Length: 68
Image (cartoon, rainbow, N blue to C red; front, side):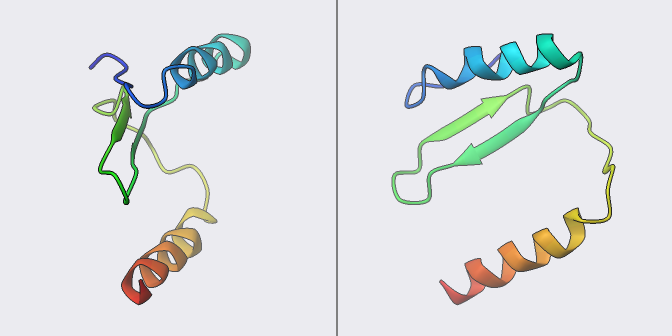
């Protein structure tokens, strides 16, 4: 999937620069909950969870969403 961004046109080149500079691979999907605008950057790329900090962060986000 190609990078898609109508609302944040400057963000995609920055993400690509980080990938080049670090040699890493980035995949993300984000949605503006107020407008529904979406940013997809190689969102179909499989990713491995690399750290245990992600679980508490996901729980925190889920609770925040549930609380509104």
